[in-house]
Image 1 (cartoon, one colour):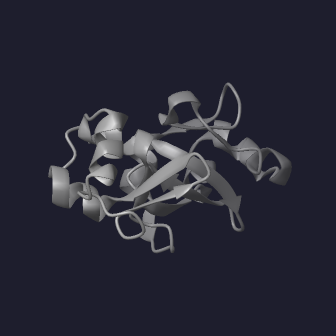
Image 2 (spheres, one colour):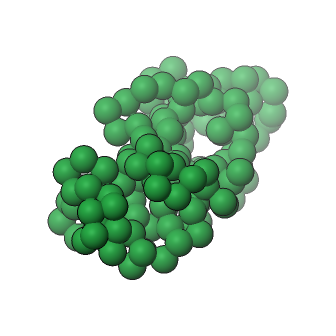
Length: 143
């Protein structure tokens, strides 16, 4: 399964907090890469390390043209941590993971299949859905 990166934040001790599209948060320790690979040694600069960004499309994270880490590496070797936002995802991410149209999810809310305030919630223009509700109604993700 593909693990798309939604956001990344540099945290103390050369670690990264990474939120994945499927509603999982992981902490990834960059120090072993800094010790093993010369290119990652440049990340000892606090300014450079804190400039980390999500790669276009969520396929990984980048610092510059020479330093990046793939989403698979981050997911497989990161340590899962619990946050209050785990298990939540945007409709757009849910549609990608389950191979659905966003209108399908909006209709599911309108017809009570996904219950507003329990399974889903709208924040401004963005709908958020729980992974548990998606799995209950649509099975396991297909993508």
